[in-house]
Length: 248
Image (cartoon, rainbow, N blue to C red; front, side, top):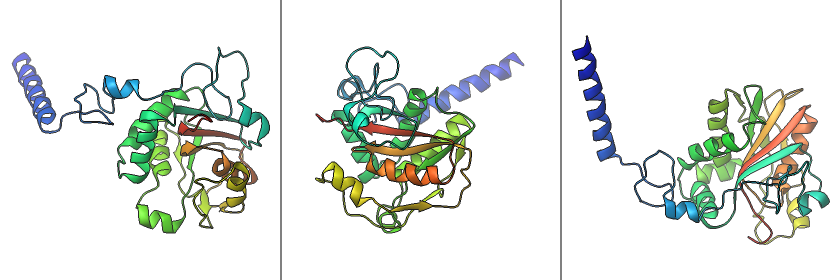
């Protein structure tokens, strides 16, 4: 029995060594070898601005000073936020920006799994098995061109990690909108007016976690949250991989 167990362990170690030789673990942002899956090497880690410490309760952006009670950034004090709370993992700069762009435009879909793990860790006190994970939808023509919705990939993994419910069709994007790049905050909100509609999911009385890859002004999340609230959701939490700061 002991000899058989030892042989099994030896075979498992040999298989692991072969797998590591054929498919070595590398940094998410470069080709440097790392010990853990979905890890960053020291150099890339130092260039990736993870949000820790005090942060805005509604959008997750980093705030100066220590956390003490409810906290709001300047944007969330002046703009309507039709959701209840929010968290972000990274500031949209350096390695954070590279990661978002690689996920969205570079076919680096494996980054969604890392994003989901980080979000689950960052928002572990807000989400759980009772949460419905709803990705911000993209228009069907953009989906056809890109072939995947990066927010849906993150939401799917979050549901798997937490045991929650993945609802990819809870929202529909019924109007294709021009790019938000270089638009003012007012124009961003106007651009998205009426672009979202209810999908095929009952959200009445549910806790909904609305998932996006990056938040800039919050116009997309606001348009989505308005519809979700109209569907009867009891609580809305917005979660994103990165938050664009004013000085980014």
